[in-house]
Length: 157
Length: 157
DNA sequence: TATTGTTATACTCTATAACTATA
DNA sequence: TATAGTTATAGAGTATAACAATA
Image (cartoon, rainbow over all chains, first blue to last red; front, side, top):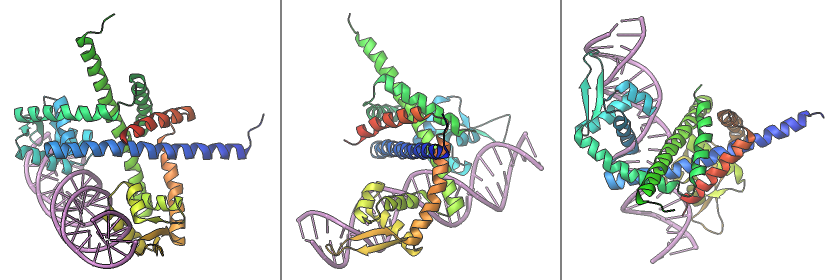
């Protein structure tokens, strides 16, 4: 059996359309959940998603992270990290610790106040996220995670 | 067999952790693809994602859409749609057509120039999106679309 | 020379609220 | 009174590029 050029084109078209539909849906889901989280962070904690994300990174790295590392992990440029860090330092939630071996660099760490502030936010944040996905079974969560893993893998080339 | 409170807590904890991991991955995937699209639209067409999205809505509705409808479909407030529309009108890509039956309202439509400008963008946009998902088989695309459908469904209550 | 981090700047996107005009 | 759309404003978020200090 032979595959005609027309067949190939038809298949390409339908796969393209499928990818586009998927992208729109992915974007919509993310935007809806992200909006919920932003609103919650603003209304309940007078903070923003990038600030929360920065603190979340520090919570996972108690020894601290360098500005450069934060910039990479948060996927934003350095100047922005400086700004966010300045705000959090001003509020006493985060501190810059000099690195003896490299006098250009700092380690940014949560303060004690920062850690407890983050805990409170993380509890609420977890509620919002669990709620966002409660329509799915554990098995479906796992499937989705795996499929998105493939997508993610493919972007980082 | 009996399910203890501790079992329930353990299960809750692991499901919560799973939801959080999933959310981080969903966010990362979306951000990576979105960045690709934004960069492409800027570099190749000197335009932005919200403007592209607005034109995409109009392309799907050749008879035009009211500002109110655009606002709803784009999930942004009215003032923003006015601003985006003003820009596109200034560039001759879009036009406001009075609605005889309601003198408060307009239909916003693509102009001929707008339609051909959008076609050119849509071709490139499709490439970027197909590329973003080319790591997945048609069956996996379908699965992902279906699972995200459940997620989306659950947000809109 | 290259790298870490900061500063300065500018632009896009967004929500909010007050407003005008029509319904 | 309610609705369609606009205006004005302020803030978040981002990238870029020039810069200082150190490696």
